Amino acid sequence: MDSLSITGGTRLDGTIRISGAKNAALPLQASCLMTDRPVQLDNMPALADTRLMADLLEHLGKQTSQNGDSWQMSGKVGRLDAPYELVSQMRASILVMGPLLASHGEAQVSLPGGCAIGTRPVDLHIRAMQQLGAQVELADGYVKARAPKGLKGCEITFPFVSVGATENAMMAACLAEGTTRLVNAAREPEIVDLATCLNQMGARISGAGGDVITIEGVTSMSGCRHQVVADRVEAGSYAIGAAMCGGTVRLSHIDPDLIASLTDKMVEAGVNITTDTDSLTIDGDGRFQAVDVQTLPYPGFPTDLQAQFMAMMCLAEGRSTIYETIFENRYMHVPELVRMGADIVVDGRRAVVTGKKALLAAPVMATDLRASVSLVLAAMATSGTTIIGNIYHLDRGYADLEKKLGDCGARMERIN
Image 1 (tube, rainbow, N blue to C red):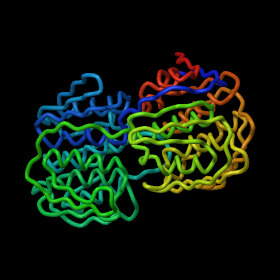
Image 2 (image 1 turned 180 degrees about the horizontal axis):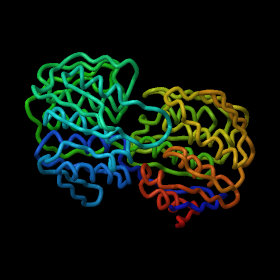
Image 3 (image 1 turned 90 degrees about the vertical axis):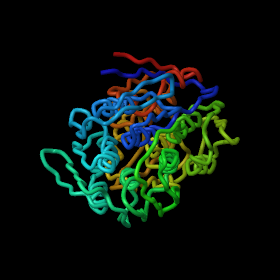
């Protein structure tokens, strides 16, 4: 399994073009199951997860092709089962359930896998399908859903905000008879991006971006061409890296408002950030103050940037407190940061970080996607060479990470 060798101590200077968002691309890929017409997605990120979703679509009968960052999906669905060997590698595979059920009246999806950052049950997905009129059972490790008479519009109130369940329910409701209202829906930019694409395909969705989404069911969907929204987590990760290492880094092809919850905290910590309509520039000197954060659903501070921000706070002046409210097991990067000399004390969902003047190079192990990049950022800020093992997680969420950071002066090499 590949490792990453990083020699720290260099400034970052240059421009990084932000890729399309993984968390937007995966449901967009699943949406093609609702039509026989071609769907073309531009600004697609070349990631292990998007390739795996393409493999799953091909298993289901779709034809997929790629031309640079433009990916096209066409053809008819020929199978209605998402097998364990594909689904177990990526949790987002559950997103094929809603489109298959709505357009073909049946779906069999293996219980999903992915990062081990918490239980993340699929019960909200199942409950939403049942409320839309599907018959659902769990058997042989599969979620087996049937709607022989089609889905019926209804009101679905989520007990807590769930991005995946919102996406699955929204796609399923597009072809349901009547009107569906999703109450306490997720508000993430990726939800808005999916709704925009579905509307281009003929859906009638309003309210995306708010906590109530209304879907007027239609009888069929068509193809479309759609550009994937920029990856705010990738942009946030590189912004934090620039602050930690010092230097001037411009992040292009990103709406700064998408990561305002992060940049507001970085400015509070003393980092100089300027914004334009489609870019932001971080001008850092490696010095900043400790600030507290609490992860929350959008537009709050993203849980997907918590590990990276913690790495930054390890070098801050003072003591910061981080509260993780989304996932119960998202501090697996803490022991690895401690191996690098960080002073972190965890008590349940609360972590207290006492900043130090420097971190130490040390062999560490990546445990999940966002923990992986937090170790990359920490390693770049040391004065020695760090070996990060088990980096396949990075390939799931960061396109061309070594090249993008290397072009700005980072010294890193992938080793087998």
